[in-house]
Length: 228
Length: 318
Image (cartoon, rainbow over all chains, first blue to last red; front, top):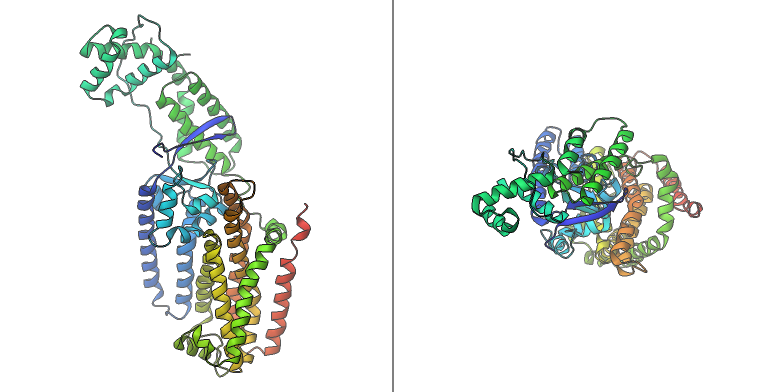
């Protein structure tokens, strides 16, 4: 329940991971979309007044109303990488449960079944369904085989300060080496005392205390990373 | 190989792919995509196998995810093959839903017949289904004296009614389908009440002897509209049945399969209801056409819809 990672094996024998998104960001995305739709409807209704409410203007207005109610999410999800404007703002996206892009059929099913998720009011059914499965799928998602994931940000690796590498005095296993590399990479995100606390655990390897221990550990990390 | 060497070796390629994913190029670049995809799959495997740090593994994972999504955007499923849809997919889907269609038909028609007979025989019966203003409104709509049939106010134009039918009828069909998620009960209720509603209007108007305005009006678009409503009921029941009786698969898999199977039905329903709305707004409402023409065209439309609906069987084995 707490682990939001979703794994699936894709062609190429790779286990791909994505982060599924819970009700809160999805609610905000929905609220934004609702606002956008409201504005569109308002503008359209103002435009259609001069054309007469019972005539041409009224007819087109009703067709637009229909399109905005039912087709707005479908068209955006299919043609804009699974993202309605609201989802785009919250950096989330609809995707098939094999992590391939959402298809027209799947998007239609999940959005038509929104009616049931909305029952009895304010998406109560949808919320309960979302919270009762590990992938935060509402009923429409279950039937369509879709999920909502957070769009991974292309995080550029943070630049590291120059560290002079140091060969460790004892040999370490690969997972241990990785931990030390991770320490090096992330140490500037940690507070000084926390860095010292972590480094002090490995006093047996660094043979130093306090600030010097941190420095030694970072140098060893650089060695494992392959800095020469 | 040490991690840093690995990173510096491939940094340029990763950066380039990251940029290309942010601004996807137009046109068919599936060959480049496929090559990049295979390359990045390999890099990700290596990074995981050699226990490179989590940041790198995550970056590669996201690259593969992005490439995978780009690659599968060109999947045939997303592109609608319109010819194949009309020729095979839609009739076949109708054929495969035949038992659901039968049930939906009965749940729509039987209450309709009972209500129709009752309102025909008993003057006051219509008021137990509809309230007074509604009845008077419908009586006005089919008054033989009216300039346009089926309209509440004569000022309403054909285009307005087209929009009105699109919005209302398709929304009803969508809700009828969605009701299937509540183990089919929602669908059954929508069908039952629509049947009763239509039946009592027909019975009441027949009783008032508005026969020559009401039936020629409904016969034309009814072919598409009623059939589409039955289809949407069938699609909804398919979902409900998948939940109730998943057979050998899990309830979830069964539901997902149903969700995939009903898709051609949904496309078909929307198309049929757009046609129906068009007919209802521009054809059925006309008073200048003779009743004979309307019945003839209505009969032809019904024949076409039924013939088409029964044409799916031969595609089953193929």
